[in-house]
Figure 1 (cartoon, rainbow, N blue to C red):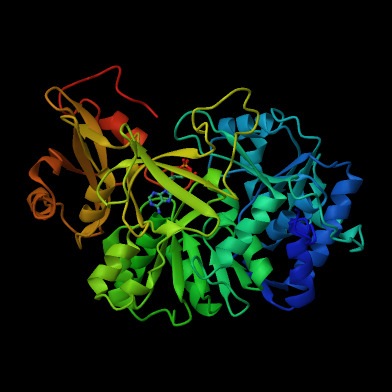
Figure 2 (spheres, rainbow, N blue to C red):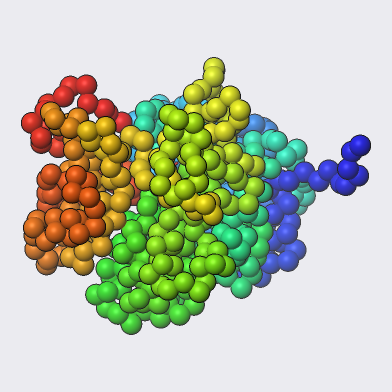
Length: 545
Ligand code: ADP
């Protein structure tokens, strides 16, 4: 017997219609490259988005065509977010921090037909153009002047009316695609469907994750090219939250100014962004009025517990730790405190906030070791597997079985985790970053978190280095805060007080900076390469990636 309910397709136009009819006057604020602020509303942005949709059709964009964006976070990018999927085309956000060769590879692999580029990013696109077979390049410019051979975004939008019906699409239609950043081999394309994105927007807004509503003003620091700014632009549209976009200005002072002036309630980004913000707040406590800010979402790599504690104790700010991947849209888990923890002391609560947390609604997790599925005992380590309504089932263009997907339909994440009896998941490492010393595993993430807990340390990364006796031993690289002196003995003492002796890195080295990936994560493959011979074994077969 079938259920007798409507088969309503879950598609992006549904979010657009809701935002238009219920939240039209809610603000959309963007910082332009010249630092001035552009103020708009959902009504205006979606009106322009409708005109853009018509213009793209007029340019010959057909359902299924990939339309790429190479752009910062701003209102025009939001217009493209709604217009492109709503005509059945596929929004492909290109990562502007990649090398032109990688952008060229990705845009070619995805067969992008039209590319929409920020004028300030034209110098980057110029290094790819000619190599990418796009039919049209559309430039988003503030002064009406665009490079020869390109189309002016504003002229296209002005040439249309906003008669666009925002009709539903079949929910399994592709809506958007993102490429993994390729820290482990060639970038791979993940293709999101209208259904997965709509459900993800709903899931992202729920209390367990962000608890979004029209009382919120959200500033995604996480770029719109990084897994769709974690789905926040769509979630905000669905729940009516105002949006504030930082444009290209991501330095701590610019972000803090926007957070305070626009009375932002919720913001999101990778830990390296928040480490910088915390330093800036510590340097000038009380300078910014952040009394409206109810949560800072942190994910992409492990949020150090000292950072979580520092924000809470010194500035009254709350970090919400999320875990996810490009393949999981990205929200997989969130460290939302269970009722049992509400009465716990602050140190216990902070320890839970530093975990990656429990599976979001409609997502399931499990861990697997060589012995089979791991028990949820909080200590046994295994590789995290995940499945759910917004988890990829294969990569774009894959032409055969892929061992990242299990025969029984789970995605193998490559993350090594423990899960406790309540389902709280803790990332111990990425499989490729674990230190395997004398047959035992050492968590580089735990050591890094401890080092970043030292008040003089700005950033720390721990990598595995080949070792004659132990196979691998940990090596730490530490960046001190400005004006602080590196003191190896003090750092060693800190670690010896917290970990078994054999966990403590044999070498702790000072550095001016830690190399970062295009998403702002520590680029450990580069560090491993740099220090590979440090323990005297120049092992040619040492792992790459
Ligand atoms: P990339 O693989 O290029 O880093 P993703 O953005 O898809 O691209 O990164 C997903 C990975 O980031 C996860 O597999 C995990 O290793 C790491 N990650 C994400 N969130 C967290 C977190 N909260 N704590 C620790 N690691 C995280």
